[in-house]
Length: 126
Image (tube, rainbow, N blue to C red; front, side, top):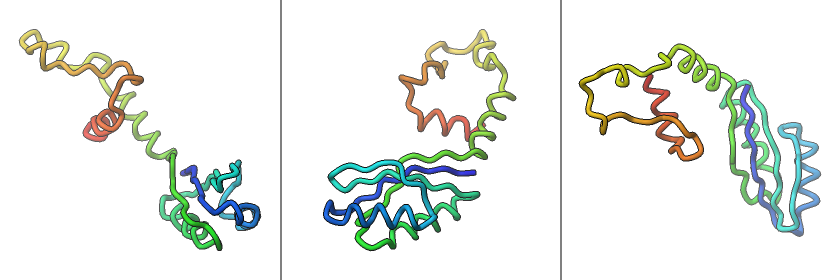
């Protein structure tokens, strides 16, 4: 299952009509909007293809200027990364090697200060 949040942009004068059309289109769930014409919705799909099909429906609604995915969650992707982490050795091999140059040790600790793109790429490479 995939879930994605989308910001829909319209002109303020069309806001109420776009919200009504979004609520009635059955491709998404409406959550909130502001007076500037930004609307927050979510879509769900069994695959990215299904999500993209729903995104196309939303983009085709009259007076929608743009509909951009902001955040995405994929159960399958999460499950795969959890498998990698669960199967990984708790102590990396490089820390067990007495001959390794300490400057070449890569710390993968604090996620708040981490480059998450590089971290996810590191997981993919495993």
